[in-house]
Amino acid sequence: MSVTYILAIDQGTTSSRALVVDGQGAVCGRGQVPFTQHFPRPGWVEHDPDEIWSSTETAIADALRAAGIGPQDLAAVGITNQRETVIAWDRTTGEPLARAIVWQDRRTAGICGELRAAGHEEAIGEATGLTLDPYFSATKLGWLLRENPGMRERAERGEVAAGTVDSWLIWRLTGGQQHLTDYTNASRTLLFNITRGRWDERLCDLFGVPRAMLPKAQPSRSPFGETSEPVFGARVPITGVAGDQQAALFGQACITPGQAKNTYGTGSFLLAKAGSKASTPSHRLLLSIGANAGLQGPEYVLEGSVFVAGALIQWLRDELGIIERAEDVEALAETAPDNGGVTIVPAFTGLGAPHWDPRARGAILGLTRGAGRAHIARAALEAIALSSVELVEAMNGSLPAPITELRVDGGAAANNLLMQMQADLAGIPVVRPEHTESTAMGAAYLAGIQAGAWASPAEVSSLWRADRIFEPRMGDSERAERLGEWRRAVERTLNWATEE
Image 1 (tube, rainbow, N blue to C red):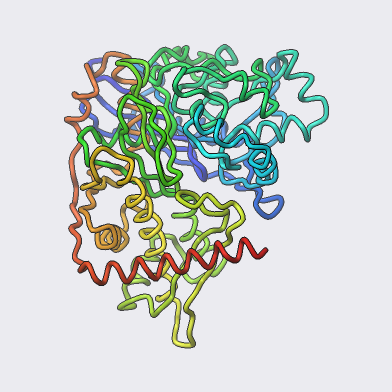
Image 2: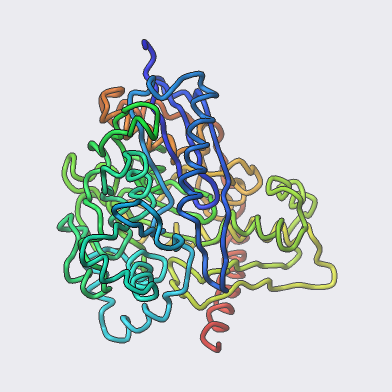
């Protein structure tokens, strides 16, 4: 065909999506399929690996149908995925051996506490760039091996394959021929040495994870095998893989000092390029490998993670019932001139950076008899923005230059009120691109460059376009007052967790 098409698979926390992108960076077809969230116990979050795969298959078929093409018309496939979530499966049959343990899951907080008490936290951080927390994959894998009889012995014999969601998708797409991951996903496991670029045997031993069950790790832009014709309908090279947040940073073309991207999905994730040296960040921020690592030498990204962002709006819809659809929150919040003194700290699954407290729990503070649905809706949007402001402030202490522009994406980036709040409370411009599907676009760009559809990252960066810029309108004194209220509210949740 005369037109080049790239398929981007975006496997997220609540849905599986697919985009067909052409050589000009235009989206020609979309597919999106939600799947079931399992909460078997408080703090536990699980997915069915087979449903992850089936929803991905349907999303791909829908995207190809919408684009009016077949799999044989694709030049390449790119994959981006929810990170830290782990899956284990039988290496022979491909059958999952348990439900996937999702990145939000907190069941291994006790294991992390034991390792911390034993004095391992500093060495883990130096090797991985991460903090010791249930968020990451290593303790999840260790828990699976401990709680499923016989799994450890089988893993040691090489009968069990495990990995993050990208590895599961690669395995299924290639008909079980490839057990691979990329550096960005590997660097989020607590098992990967980010300065050496390989699995760390000492960490594997510490967490009790047999090296034999882990995939081979390689650069994000490299060959990951070909799709299986019986599975996919054609043999198409898989040429780009990256964890969702590094993919979004690549898709947002944040190449200039002072630029950062913030993705508003189930959680919220702020990333900025940190250079080619693995320097230990301050404020308990995270250092991970970027999507260009291994091609022009090392590349690292600085990251702050908020566990609950869009999930807070879903909670207003599903549990409180104050809105019927997630998109209704903006109109409801706009009916209130302010938050009425209400502050929400959405620590449903603990607090991420810069606090990293898995015991913290959510709170709604400042309620009076006059507080209503609109005040709670507005406070929820402010909570999402304020959580990210904490990350901006923390990140400014570790980057060569402070953040002066925040590029945004993800579902909630369409909320104009939230974006204006973000600009006001952060005190910097917030820029929304024409394509807010930056995660999937990043995967498409990575795969397309490797496949020859584009010559370089600089070329795909030229495809990026701004849709709207939100300039800050709030004065310094009001901003300082609002941030003070937020910090006091967060402190209350931390104190509560300690008292518990």
